[in-house]
Image 1 (cartoon, rainbow, N blue to C red):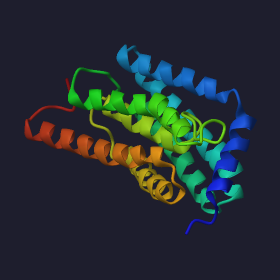
Image 2: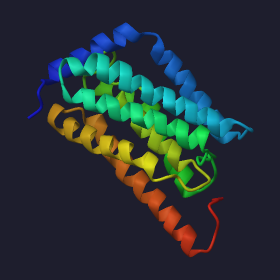
Image 3: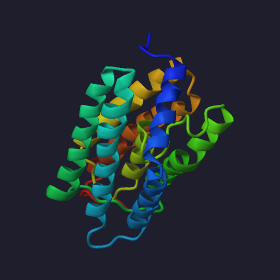
Length: 221
């Protein structure tokens, strides 16, 4: 049993979305910029994408979880800490010790990643509206955990080097937590969260395994 009702859950999003407007527009602009940077590599594109991810996850940890969701769920305090840790990991592995290399390429991994990104930014909010909990009662890309986690998994599939397993742990854990809550609350668009987590982690592990067996270095076409 969850310590809150569906009405309380959607009520938090209503207050949260109204309070932070127009951050939703900023989030979408940042998301589009990230996609462009992944498609057109520049000298510092990997670092800029990593900073953007850190901004997304840091915002959700501090503002959404700690300031809003914690008002109806004490577990949100722990969630907030996890999201802040994830934001730090993006900076560590993307800027301080850069190991993340983003690139949109014509391969099954990147194409799957782009499909997940499209789901997070476009299809997710449309489904929410069709299912009766559209804006402002719905999670929004860039400022709410579930669609942003789906976007994150999609972006990680658009990489050209091995993704450190450390950065996969918290997003995967959230994919399980978010999906379990979705079943209870009836937020059916979050079924895509579990699909994104299972599919992305599986594909990334498979990509690394097959590449090692093929005797290649940590670069992918």
